[in-house]
Image (tube, rainbow, N blue to C red):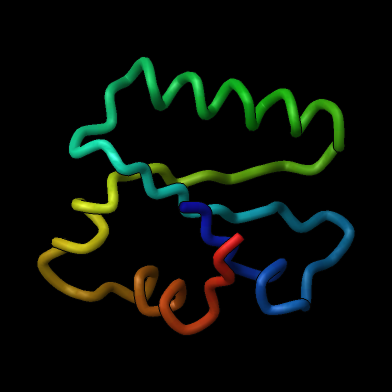
Length: 83
């Protein structure tokens, strides 16, 4: 599952704005190898598009079981767009 958040999701992005993504994987544990695979693919998109992509990658389990709500998680719940 990929969730767009930040200025791109709100519709107030500028030309220099990055693309903020929360990437939730189905595996219980995010291995370094899997994380590298995702980041490498996003890097190739960055190079091709010239737009910076800022991913946060975690498992659904980590996201759903976080001990408390932070401004970050509240922002995503309120403004995030599932892609």
